[in-house]
Structures are given as structure tokens and as C-alpha cells.
Amino acid sequence: MNTAFRHNLVGRFMLIGLLVLVAGMALIGIWVGTQIKRGVVNGSGVVTNFYVDGAISPHLQSLRARDRLEDADRLALNRLLTSSHLGENIVALKVWGRNGRVIYNSPDPSVVGRRYAMERPIAQAFGGEIQSRIVDRGELPKRIQDGGRSRLIETFAPIRAEADGSILAVAGFYQPAERLEQGVLAAQYRSWGVHGAVTLVILILLATLVRKANGIIEGQQTELNDKVAQLTALLAQNEQLHERVSRAAARATSLNERFLRSVAADLHDGPGQCLALASMRFVALAEVCGRCDHSAGKENRIAEDFSTVQVALQSGLSELRAILRGLQLPEIEQLSLPDTIRRVVNDHERKTGISAPITASDVPDRAPLPVRIAAYRLVQESLANGYRHGGGRNQRVSIAGSDNDLRIEVADDGKGFDPAAPSARGRFGIDGMRERIQLLGGNFEVHSMPGQGTVIRATLPMSPFREVDG
Image (cartoon, rainbow, N blue to C red; front, side):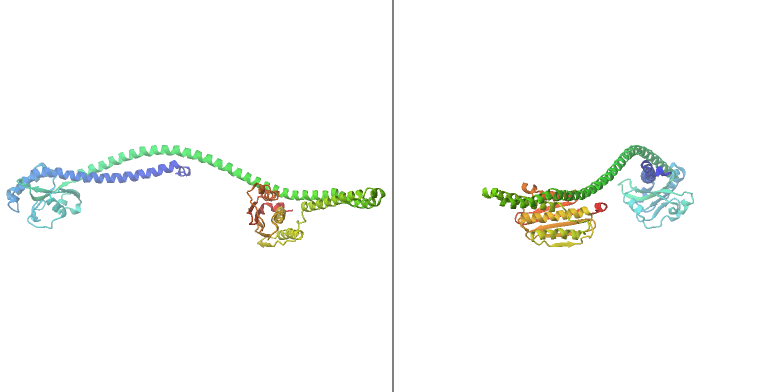
């Protein structure tokens, strides 16, 4: 049997079906043969009993008055067994009385008159039943064995009185079993043949159905494998795209900070310098114009105007410098992650005068630059919002992480707010933090209730940005 057949569903089904067929044929044949043998033996015993009863019973009616046969009856039985058709079908005949005494024994007349323990089949025959069985050579009497019979049908039948139907004795007669066994064997062969033919037809029909089903399954399996291969390719592409998007987001974060730094530098070197120069010149002009006669004649209005313009310029310059400080990120490229968090907290404490303790747990020393930038901006904006809207009450920062992710929590006990309210959803600081964290593939959460403070939690992945560091 080749490998292809061995692994083929139809081939395996046919092999198993063939084995089941052979086993079923054997079992059913044996069972049918046993049932046929039992039925034929019982039927043969009943039929033979009618014949024997009609031929032998008249010669045993004298047992009603005595416990032995008369000589005339014994001679008549001997003639029946030697010179009639009955003798051709019966090998031996025995007759037992109720007391277990042998009344007649054709194979061995010397045992007549002896009393034996009554066997079960004989006792059942005295109860009115006809008992038949096939006996082997070892169970046969010696004289019957000498006759060359290997197996006989042994039948025990009650002999009834013609007057009242009472049981006078039990006749045991033996018939050759060769014809019966040949008939049983032929019946077994026929049953095996019929069963084999029927099972073979069923097996062929089932094999046809299995072959069709196997074709459908193989087609569906091929289609499924193709779809799995397509999905695997799509997943690989999605993974590559996700990695590229993550790297692009990290680069965008770094480029955004560099752009803000460039904008801050341009504002400082351009409009900032111009405003500073203008403010210095206005101071000088205000001193000169304030002492001239024309100015004195106008009730010092010119000096006051110069002073107003100077204050406006100084205020605008201060606001521009504050904006520049917010746009420009400190030099954190060479700082570790814990130093970056301490830097932003220290800046907040210096500007506001409010302490914000830091709790760190398993924080890695190094982290990619995009992660440090996002962490800096998140803590900066969270502390600023807590101070601006919540009064900076009990502000605190907690950081924890591993080589794979960084977890940041900024909390306060300020006024709090409802994050689901429309006004809360319009807060640019919260929206900006959320977008910054989600852009890097992280998670951002805000937990707050009016009067119960605010907790901001964020988780940033670090593994995808190892190659984008710096």
C-alpha cells in the first residue's frame, strides 16, 4: 500500500470498511450458524419425537402396571431398530423409568435394570419437555463410539400413557449429526455471502459519498489555505505598515520639536530683537521729547504717549519671550529618562513655587528620544493645567516602566472637572496630550470629578522607537 493511498481519506475508509466487513461476516455467520443449529436440532428432535412416539410408545404402555418391559415389547423394539426405516435414522435407543432405572438400552442390554443418577435433560423430559443437543464423541457410550459416529444428536422425550397422558418413561434416542451439520455449514456460507454482498454494496455507496465529500473537503481546505496565506501576507504587511507608521510618528515628534525650536529661534532673532531695539529707542526718545518745549506746551501728552507705547512694547516683549520658552524644548538629548522628568518638574516648581514630588519605580535609565519628548510634554502640560485650573493643590508625579513600556501618572487634589462635559472635550491641552500619546501608539486616560481632583495616566511603548532614538 503506497503512501498516497495510506493518507487518502477514501483509501483509509475502504481499508477500515473491509476489515469491518470481514469481522462482521465472521461474527454474523457464527451467530447465524449457532442459531440455525439450535433451531434445527430442536426441530429435528420434535419431529423425530413424533415419529418415535408413534412407533415406540405402543410398546411401552405396559409400564403403567409394572416397572419393566415385557419380553414381547422388548422384541418388538429390537425389530423396529433393526428392520424398519426408524432403525436407519436412530443409532441407539434408551428408556428410563421414573426411579432412574434403565428399562431398555439398545447399545448395551446388560445395563437394563440398573439405576443411575438422573441427569438434568432426563429430569426435564420427565417434566414434559423435549430436550435435544449435539454430543461429541467423548460423551458417547462406548458401543456407539465403536460405530464410527463422531457426533450425534441426543434427544430426550417423554413417553405418555395413552389413557390419561401421564408420563410413563423417558426415551433417549441418538441420530447422526452429519447431515444437520452440513446443512448448518451451508446456511452459514449463505448467510456470510448475503451479508458480504449487502455490506459490500453499502461500502461502495459510502465510499462514493466519502469520495465526493473528500473532494469537497480538499477543495475547501485548499481555498482555506489560500485565504490563510493571503491573511498571513496581509498581517505581515499590516505589521510592516504599523512599524513604519510608528517610526514615522516618532520622527514626526522629533521633527516637530525641532521645528518649534527653529520657530522659537526665528522669533527670538527676528521680531524679538526688533521689539527689544524698538523698546530701547523709545526709552531714549521719551527722555528727549519729554524735555522739549513743544512737549511742555501740550501738557506732557507726548511724554505720556511715549510712556504708553513703551509699556506696550515691554509687555509684548515679555509675552513673546514666554511663548518662546514654551515652544523651545530644553536640551534633553543627552539626559536620561529620570533626569528628563526631574527637569520638567524642577522647571514647574521654579515657575510656580509649588512642590510636585516624584515617585519612580523600575524606570529604565535610557529611553528613545521620541518617548522622552512625549513624556516631557505630557508632564509639563499636566502640571501646568493642574496649576492653572486646579490651583496646584498636592500635585504629584509617578513614573514606572520596563524595557517595553513607560507608565506616567500626574495627579492633583484640585477642583477637578467632568471629562465628558463639552467644555472638557474642548480643552486644547488635554486634546493635545491625547493626540501626542496616541500618535506614538500609547494609551491616554483622564480620570476626574468635580471637587475630587484629576488623575492623568499615559502608557508609552518604547520598543518600536529604538532605531529612531535621537
